[in-house]
Length: 581
Image (cartoon, rainbow, N blue to C red; front, side):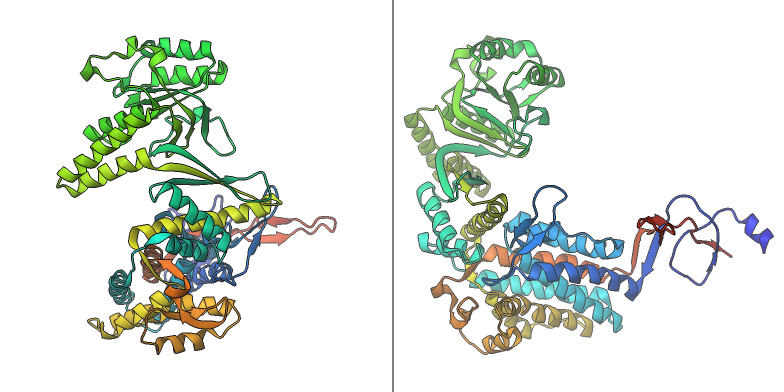
């Protein structure tokens, strides 16, 4: 046996016991991979999904509870935001953590697309995966189950679009914001008033306030989706933003290739002690390095961003930016040269805020009459064009020129209270934006509940696909049931009673404990939020069902130190290695 052992060329280190593997007590260096198969693997992943979903589910509905979690620095945080809770949960067990991370991906994707509905997406994903695991363990084909789930989701999405109601007026916007802010009517009124003053194209940001009460500051501004070209331009490390007060603004449609071309402008800003904001097609490494060095060592307040969009549309947007800032676009097509630009003709604004993704120019110094003429010219051009794509781009340009910028400063008596208020404000703003895009549906989870009735007529090609459809039908009951459970009512009983209703607007007001017309009562959800929650949850959960093997880094066993004065744990020196025989 020893001769055979010595002749082996290498060893395979795994913990899964397969027919051709046998254990040998051999000391090894390094860490191997651990493999789990089949039902055992899915069970471990499901444990992580269950624990994360249980924590997130407690926040759902008007009577949902808060979650407190510890921070490695600073004070503990209290929140009801589902995606925030999910992000903070990690497990020591790698398989459980893998399941939790997959559910986090569902919540993050829903949050990125719709800005709300993360709690709904999380509990839907957990239910779909849990029921799918049971079905696979019973011998059903996971690929057919996934196919059935996809068929059912597509059917429900079409039903949701059919039932969607367009948003009209301030009152409906207020209702959407109120529901998303967990029934806070003050937040609903605040958001509705901002949209009423600034229009649906307004850019709204949320920041920390310095008072006990939440305040709103509304200013005219322009926003476009380009961030700083280098993080060295950041002036506020805590928020990761560049904030320039009263900067001079240079807008050029060419690439800046050498520092000499902008040297007169830099010298002028240095002498006048003014910040400089540059919008250009691109900037080479040599001039960029010089700007960064001057910013870090010379104290020059400066930031450069690339021009938004592409092609002819880029040039038109640069012209819009120049007009809003009271300057001219430096372009060679009109015989203008960057080197000969008069620094006194640069544009200006009260403030420029730049993140890694976008830029906001507040209170540009442009002439209002010229800006209004520009807006009218764009609207006239839109009426003449027949291309849908061109119309969308023209609408975006009008939005930039007309949309104001509103800053909501969240108030509170402590940092914990301010943070919780910011989470609810952000949810309300995202839900309102989603509602204006795709319309609204009855809230309280009844939109999915009634849409699931359409699955009765849907049939798959075999028994396993039909079972996948049935899983989705039962999953659509979960949000409404969880809202009722969190409010102290018997959720399963209420769901059964609602399914007997013929009016799809009838639902259960968990805050008051009565059955009402959800639309008339103002308990509504954005269609986009409901749709994204279901689609994202089904996509990830159905893939998790089809997993047959799970691979993770092996966890080293621990032993308690024999020293009576020591309560530390030490890694086990002896490990088992499995070799081929």
